[in-house]
Length: 336
Ligand code: SAM
Ligand code: SF4
Image 1 (cartoon, rainbow, N blue to C red):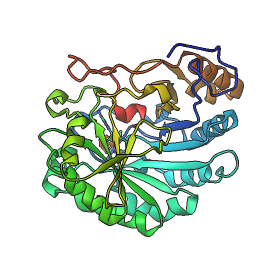
Image 2: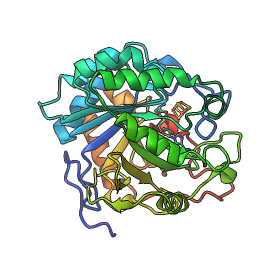
Image 3: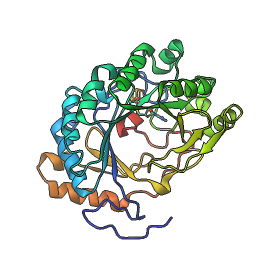
Image 4: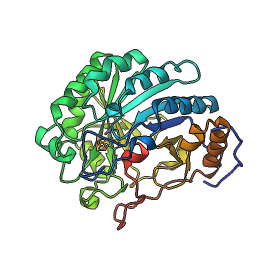
């Protein structure tokens, strides 16, 4: 894939001809869990003044929508710990049908039971909930102290509110690698979908990720001993490859950033809680929009987005065995 075009100012098409219609916005770098592959135990969080206000996030959302963005996902850190986040969902939800097609959420589920009715009422239809183990002791270990029950109550409340739930499970050798079948059957019974994710080398986390890295090819072969997995033609424009599971209604996704690069069809950019926008999860290419937003310059913001689109990298290049993380920032900063 070579750079094919000069980008058109004001559009969301990059120099490789990829249409970017999906933006992930991290609304906070803070979190009420400390998953071992994601964060260090003692994280230095950003001061409040460095974080975009909720009004600034909405303003940025409107700029993106005007440029052709159709889907916005709020993430973090843990988005539901941000004070006032309910108002943000209401504000962005009011744009659905007026340029925006969808507002979604990625959450650890701990506070989801409180928010599920408000989310549904705001127009959110789908949520991704991270859940790496259904065993309370393991869940507490992986998340450094999380309580499984709160997440289970959260997903139950989401379903009750009519939200479609997808469970995200990071595949971790030695930590949850005997739970894939169980998780698949549980999701099937609950009416959820399941996506498995390879651990990515993002940010220092005190632990050695290499010893927990598990290639999803191995997991797929293992699941194929028990189930018939039929590759699905449906693509969401995202990085996951999907499989139908014969005899079950659950759809299985696999995100393989290390074992199979998925960048050719990339449709997204990511906004950190500070207003820094990254062209790629695995690169430092970025523009800093916060000051432009604060000085009231929508034109300046547009010019910076043009620059970001023109320079959006062709793809990431993760290697799990590399001595240092591919990029220094954590997933919780960029917005997973
Ligand atoms: N706190 C929310 C949650 O856990 O869903 C949203 C933010 S979290 C950064 C988003 C997703 O990124 C989660 O599914 C998490 O498992 C995943 N994640 C975090 N660090 C990762 C890493 N180093 N490699 C792969 N996935 C990671
Ligand atoms: Fe928090 Fe999500 Fe990172 Fe876990 S994966 S520490 S829940 S931001």
